[in-house]
Length: 385
Image (cartoon, rainbow, N blue to C red):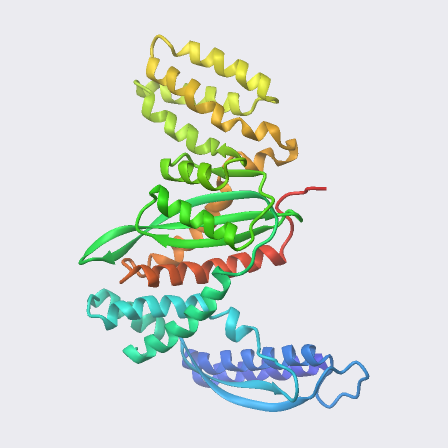
């Protein structure tokens, strides 16, 4: 029966595309989405249409027409309804959150009069329709309510906490500034990654980081054994104020990058990078301390500033030795945030300059929700057993 239905759907799609060509793509997509929603309703009901079953949870109750505006045009949908319990196809929410946020962000630029011809072209290509101020207001309010609920959800126990910040261009007070986007990632008791929080601030100063970390605490974050981050002054001070007893691992990758500023000759860079990697790859902290002493003495004469910097900073990358060996590769750097930063950059570069801080936070939040959901439904990042 299911195979027959799939064959019918495929034939219908093929017929539409054969008849209308690519101009019929919106119709073909609507057929696929409608069929997917019907299948999801059947799974929700635990029974196919007209099927007699003792396991049935509820009964189908027809369809509700809905027009969806997308990049390929308006799609006519038939949203399946059920009689008694709440049901809404997941596609209509999960699949469109980040796109709605991106459209709203770009549309704000257009509506408040700061857009360029390039932005207008982007809107036309992405949305395929004009956007009014009332459309933007309505879409933003609905989306903001959903995103606020996610950003303020109750947290629980997380063993490891990764902290990072990236920057986006935002219009503020008649100028364009770099807006700091704070991101927190946690590793829970089951070893799974989760995006715990995101906040857009005007800088990475200590009060802003402290406010962000305190918000995580207020929402119930507990059980943190290690914080992994770069050595930004504001972040270090905030961490000391909010999580004074939690161990801190300075990102080893960033430590190697920071060392480059203290190398006096270009031809020394490869050797210095090799020596620092050798220290971090030591099998124990005792061996790492021994190698650090040797390497520091090696450069004491030709690069005294580098030698002094090594002794004062590289030990901040040794905290990882206090944790399980199997975890070292994952918690000695802040690479856990790199995939997030790449995905955020891919989605935000279209907007180029956000009209305000709120629109920037809106889009980044929508992207992070989708990534976080993928992590939670996927495998474990670390094994605590």
